[in-house]
Length: 136
Image (cartoon, rainbow, N blue to C red):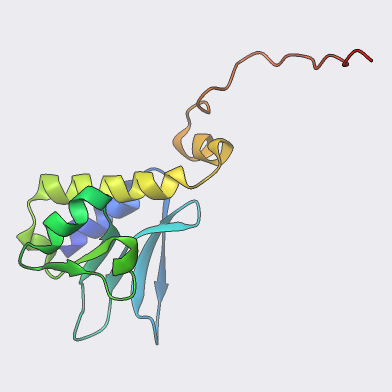
């Protein structure tokens, strides 16, 4: 995928929104429910470098590959930066971005997750029970 396809893919994920910040950040960031899951750097010399969060078990594996490094400032939170998105196979990049999106979504309340995904909250019952008074 090239930069445009990656941007379109991020924007198409459930509940995804984007915000572009100018100086000094120079980022095009993607959010779900107000939680960032990916961003592009938009200024030189790092223009179109793409960053996202990865699973703990994938962090070292990915940062050992050429063209993928720990993200500046966010590497300690297991974010990686891909220097050129065209160098990563499409299916792998999509799976990594989906994981980052799901990880951000998982930090939201179950009700907010259900609102975004359109699914019933996990463990929610369709029938509400009337609360009984406790015996005294």
